[in-house]
Amino acid sequence: MTIIALGINHKSAPVELREKVAFSPDKLAQALKSFPGTTNAEQMVILSTCNRTEVYAKATNKDDAIALSHWLADFHQTGSELVLQHSYVKHDNEAIEHLMRVACGLDSLIIGEPQILGQVKQAYTESKNAGKIATEFEKLFQSTFSIAKRVRTDTDIGANAVSVAFAAVQLAKQIFSRLDKSQVLLVGAGETIELVAKHLVDAETKSITVANRTLSRASDLAEKLGGEGITISQVPEHLAHADIVISSTASSLPLIGKGMVATALKQRKHKPMLLIDLAVPRDIEQEVSELDDAYLYTVDDLQNIVEQNVANREVAAQQAEQMIASKVQEFANWQQHFQNVDLIKSYREKAHGQRDELLQKALNKINDGVAAEEAMQELAFKLTQAMLHGPTKALQQASKMPKETQLNLLAKSLGLDVSENRETGKE
Picture 1: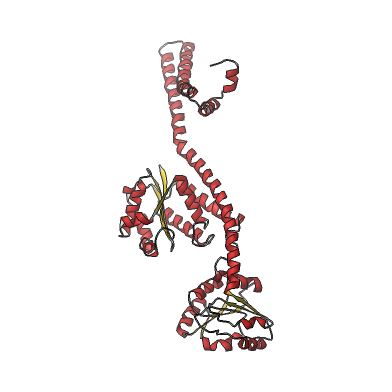
Picture 2: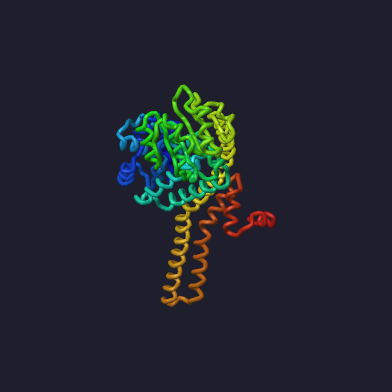
């Protein structure tokens, strides 16, 4: 038996292929329900995000990865050669390590991003509900969730902002402590501002106004945030109400000048204002920083913070790798014991069977008139011979091997001391 991880991610494939092999919720349910027996997969979990599609399977042997890749291609009606070309396959401990690295955010586009753990948990839940999780995968995924939580708790893997948008919101939180009481003005409605808006919502910001050249675009984004949409031309009259201004447009000239901010601060009775300019070229005149009570940060200021935070996450990632390696070994030890449980069970059943058989023969002889003492002596002799036969052969074979590890292990399991027997000249 082997554990297989078959995947396609942002490192191995272009976005066009990643889109083709992604599983929507409906497709995922269908895939789990109709997963074919031809792949020899006994247990499985499908992880599908915007940056990766991965299939984790407990299969008969390593060659079953080929069947898995063909199934993935067939299910999504795409070329199997294309899937094989852009996919990666890992087995057993490497597959286990990969799963744990993914859950900890070490294999993500941004190291330490927190969303992936929730996505792994959701994938596990979907598979469990579909009846695709048994003892071994239950243990594997619970071990994965455990190490991911420990990495989050014991390292700084997710403590620092590593995107400019996130850094902007973190900076605002540091200055204002809580954002639920702050008035925020977003200038622009592009991708960067959308990402800023998402982080603001996560920070429980209640009052957000969005300004854009196109009112409909501003209103669409503001509606998602429970805020108000305005045009760029309306910014001067709204500026005085803003505690935090975050701007990112494609304007070739500054939209917010020193005079505009000075007027707003006067109306605010010099209550402090934080201005964060994420645009290149700048949206906010540099001279704004000369005003008392106006605190201006540019994209370069935030980029320096991000670079330092990335370096900090790299250090945390190294700590996480060591923790994961230890957890992989812990699971491997459990897995070996789990796989040998049947062997131990068979050995005990065999011993009990031999005992019962010989005991019945002895009782039959006593019933036939043989003296009880004679029958018991014969029972003891035959039972001892039966119990000694296997271990004796194993000891003889181990004693002929160049390395004594197996001999010492067998001796220990039988309660023998090899060194003591050598000193007394015993064989």
